[in-house]
Length: 296
Image 1 (cartoon, rainbow, N blue to C red):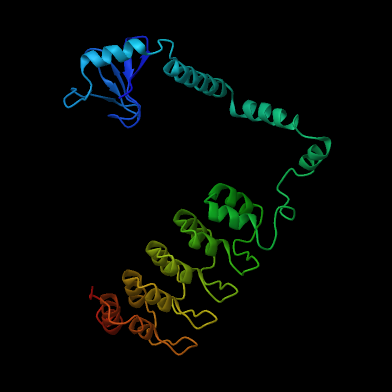
Image 2 (image 1 turned 45 degrees about the vertical axis):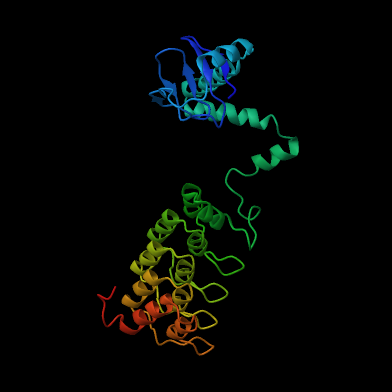
């Protein structure tokens, strides 16, 4: 096992290479502690079971380049980073932002600077298309503060893109629960249908987001809205074989007799999966709930 000697202010230490013992661990001579890769102090290994004997260690250490400065280099980088943090912390937020703005503006051409000067606030017409709307991008990216700034400037929370989807649709598809909750509190319409007729509930069921399903139901989403193919969220739940969501929908009024345009009920879809345990399980669920709400 290759061992390298590094120097610190307190002792000479051996660095174990990756793959031997704890990767990147540094062990000092004599009685000491070990610095783990996570930066926590731990009791060192007692050495039992080690394949290295004292003689071989001494020979290998003698052959090492005593000018190995890897550890010192890492230390210098950390000090540089700490110094930068101190400089920023010593500046007030306003001073730092002003200085940073001036620094960036010096990098701009005259044409680029003119564009910046002409837009004291976001120019939504220039940064939007029917497919890519900033509100939707922020929602899917989880950028709640940026999303709120647009809403404060009058952007419609239910604005739809070329696919008929709202920010709530996108946040649901992306499983962004904090954003979903925020949009609902801000008044997002839970029953908007996209160009295929699907609501946010259809997508919450499809991605298996049970908490989002519960939240949408709490905000009075229509659990029986069918898309253009006649599929309700219950059809989607059975297709995905999600037992828990299927039960939630049934208990909250989902119509299990509703047929899609192909003439299939949710029960038909379950039976089409064949003689598997999940098929029987979902079939029983569809048969006894909601009459037996306690069935589990």
